[in-house]
Length: 99
Image (cartoon, rainbow, N blue to C red):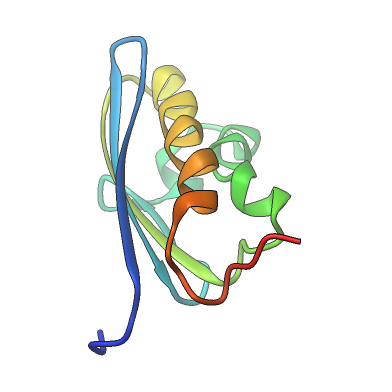
């Protein structure tokens, strides 16, 4: 990682679930507890729900997301969502500009 690469770290919580997440500019790689989102979540729609904030702002392929999740799968999705939604708007990543 170069010195000028912006890194955004945040923690999302939902009920008893906690998700510690790093977002960096990249190629769209999504990792949860060392596994790709599609392999971590038992259904494709669950993975899509977790990264839906990236789809909303059309940046799914522009960021790499690494998450450490301490929860059951059903609680992990909203914890990731709660982290990513406001996090994308607060981040200092230069390529992200609000319309």
